[in-house]
Length: 328
Image (cartoon, rainbow, N blue to C red):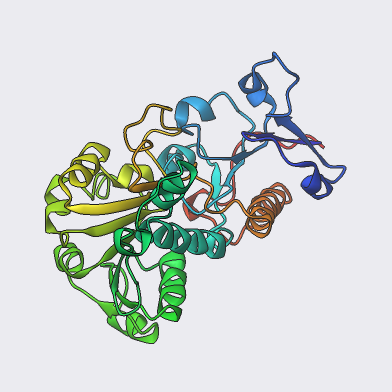
């Protein structure tokens, strides 16, 4: 029998995926027990985004053959360490696309329509002339700048175009032909994108090159009064620089589903602002999105354990996996 170690507890509704050849360990450990203690039994890991999966952790699991991420991002998994140990790493790149794109647009609309401020005024019983004093933005005809034009960014573009928004994108890995197919203007530099966009939405992976891509220097390129949306990774943004840009009015608001680190402290200065709409990394957390995430990760784990190559293998050099012998 194989053992699958879960960082996050597997919901009961997906336990049907565990047939008689596998059992769940880790997050399913009894209360008071250290879930990491059972890593030594693990043939597979279903990983979330909270832990760092490097060689030190992998060496606690000598039987480990595969790590599957319930998500598209894998910046918390060291591919080099996994490959060196013959461990396959896969992810679920299509699973969060629709839900995350919808959430990005929801955050965009919430922040540009100033919903947080309006609700606070209503709850406080404020008696103001709302028609003249509530200064929201009409997005029709405005320009959305996408940093990253992969699965999620492309879906955001489609949704935004349905609202009559002009869409530009900066992505050095996307061809002009692909952007043209999507009806998107591809710009050659991040600076050009930021200078023209009324709203900037981030959809890039977190890498050493993209960490703090949005910083004091790049925020100064933005149109004064622009908005920022981030549903990708918190590390893309220098939060102190973002706070300064909001304080100065360089940015009019921000919609954030991710922070660095996560979760942010309750006293985080961005959370108390009425020009920031924040959610706790829940962009993909819909019923449909959750199902695709869990099913996509578990199906690939079972494929590897059966000796079948998974479709979303991130380190093909690791195939076939070389870790310990299976327990039958």
